Length: 421
Image (cartoon, rainbow, N blue to C red; front, top):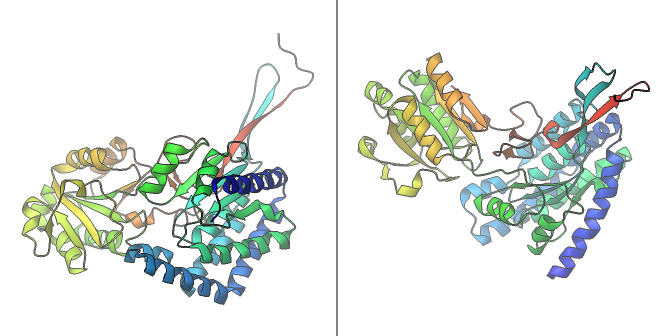
């Protein structure tokens, strides 16, 4: 184990290398970044066997550590998930390069021509837990936006992340870009996390990707600016004007497709009018699918449901568990979400345009949906190729954070011997 001094020395060394790489990436041509990402995708495909073997080590470690089935699902890689990593890398590679894009431009009566142009943030630190695909997603998006990145993966995904990172470096090398553009912390030592959070001389922004404990730690201790990714306490509200068959499909998908992702539904709100028209069909579907539904009132009459504890509303289960409640119309749903939500993703199921508009207008979560599963709260599904996380704050980046959100801007001002009166 390294001590705190060694951790600081490690981050100082990695940070200095990242700063140098970021200076070069800021003007790296778009074709070079595209080539690096496609070469990395080729490397991931070529090293499938090694990546799966590394993941098997991590799965054994996670099982021994007592990770929940949902967390083990986050950790697990198979051929299909590795193929998704490859597809994500190629999708990011094919996107337009955001660096240098003119966001807007205008002329002033003084004769000045002013442009607002996208520019890289610099060095990004990404601290994440058990999902090894973040190694590729974060590395790709940071590189596309002209940033260097220091990745600190979770202890559970240590071997998988190293195997994927080696492929990212192979891509950088093939394209002639600095290998320090994508660095992975080579130790499980938690002292490194503290040093990253304090590394204001090297890191421009920290992105935490994980559970409430990790995000809370980062927000409390970071001296570096943070793109907050809070819990995914996602709600679905079934309005009285919902189409019952659409609602049944969406609710089941939102809870059961993958329970361990931040876009999984954690609370189902049912309009009393929907309940009176259709009964507890949505809850019955969930119970039949093996979901433990924690609820109250009339919904407890459904066989298989259990009484909800006070803290079950506003809880991220990340498992085959959800809360459910009957509310009085859209305003009841809005009030509940305002009280218990995490400003991540909410979906309304309704055929009434006015009700949907009210839901959209009066809630301020990063993502609001209508007649769609909250499992679509994902940068890849938004056409970003991948995401570095879902930002739930309101400053700079919000919602899925893709390459464009990993840029800032500068002003380019052109005159012709122009002087101010």
